[in-house]
Length: 407
Image (cartoon, rainbow, N blue to C red; front, side, top):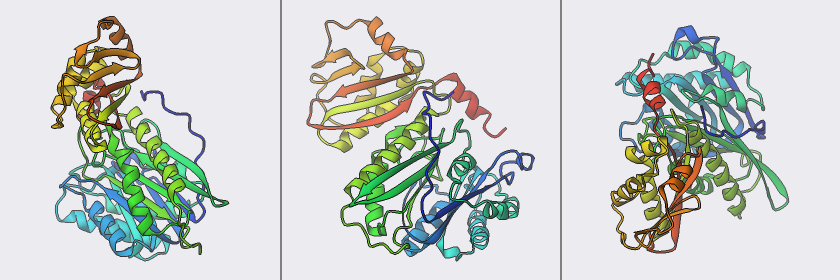
């Protein structure tokens, strides 16, 4: 069960975009008509775009194609096609053929040039891609296109997710209101650079690609690159941002600070939902590293703690084994003075200046670790920088889910 999932209001329609879904039986023909597994996002105008993609060297063909398309045609993007149930990864030369086939089918259904279409796939790796079943259902997705289709699309891209993930925001800039809506999927194979996820964000704010790309990278670094469920980075991770504002005739905003803040907060919301819905996760834990020499060093220490199996199993057992946290921090490769650090779990001080706090008792630590949501704060006493990383625990359910994933 997810950990304290948010009660989501309906996602906001974004001017210039329509979204449709279809049930194709991507994972198995037996699932056709039983669950939606194809999402089609169509822009009514050419969009400026940005993307952040997996750093796994074993990339799926759809990732390479999307990155190349944004590089070559980043001011003309007209559609995104995404399927769940099959990653179209690890299948050799046919992977590129099937990826292009998915793009061509979506382009025809949307009535746009194939060079202006981004694609993304998620699901089982190393399984032949059922392009024929997907192409057969593409018309269903096109026929269902509506401005209010974001929630259905969030459901269609799910794999092991237990709930659909979306977020919306309205930002007022110089007297004009702009909408941002994003959907995401992710539950397992989650780790920074990026996590195993698909995320698609759309806005009508008038921003050009040169503005969008660095903003998206910064937003991803503070959100999707700050989560970890199991330490595995996927072959298919894709985060795309489209702006219809340019196509609607607007001139680019000159002051983008408010938009970037809203975008970052929206990405944080989506990223935290992924951890809350992590495979087998029963606890949502914030790892806060303060007193670091740089944000990157703080984030690196936090990530090392977040991914440690010994730390995560201690979380699962409600065992305040703070020695495992220190051990993980020491394995991060970041230099710090063990005699100067401090450690706290919520309001319970465990260590101070490298020594066990005289008032600490294990029962207090255990009480914090028994909560379904808590914060670990590690003070490196090296500087003023800090960062947060969000993670969960390792339970027996994680093993069960992944042992039975293909069945």
